[in-house]
Image (cartoon, rainbow, N blue to C red; front, side):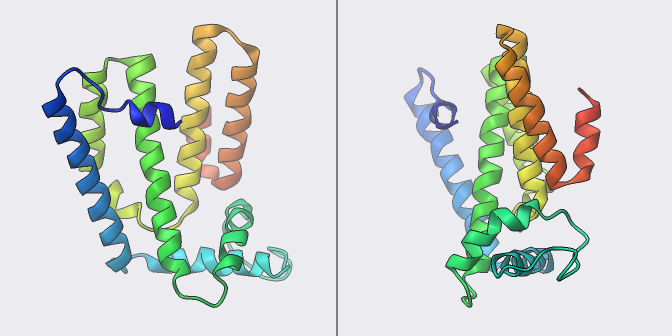
Amino acid sequence: MLTFMRNIFRNKNNGENIFLWSAWGIFFFLVIKASIHWTNGISDTIEHLQAAWFVGTGKVPYRDFFEHHNSLLWYILAPIVKLFAYNANIIYVAKILAVILYFFCFGLMYHIISKHLANKQIAKLSLIYLMILPIVSGLINIRPDVFMLLCNLLSLNYFYNYLDNKRRRDLIISYVLLSVSFLFLQKSLAFILGF
């Protein structure tokens, strides 16, 4: 995954390359800064962190406490929450984790578009368009959506790799990732039905 992240804006024109990397850096810094100071929708973050804390202390979801979400996110977050137990900084750590995962999603989208669907210029334009959408305000809270999106995009990448190479392993990984995305959120069913 890091290989295509490094190659996002590699081209022959170094001036354009420096400008684009600077723009990405400034955008990333602003999103991290906003995630620290933005309190809108923080109830979702606190809700998931509390559920992860319950899981980390040995409680079983739906038996010892009730939540209306799937529990896979809480099991993944439990070790991180235990690491920062009784420390309010876990909120900032969780927000920064969400932002980093969304940036991996952006990089993965660029990789899928440039390798399988279109050329690199269209991939760059689609990423710029994605960044100005209201989704950016939702990426600063820890929610199962970012994990679902990451699994969906990884599965799509493996599916396109299967179509290119006809390796059964890529197809199996693609469908396992689709199943995991469903375990994060059931709304990934809309994406799964597209397959």
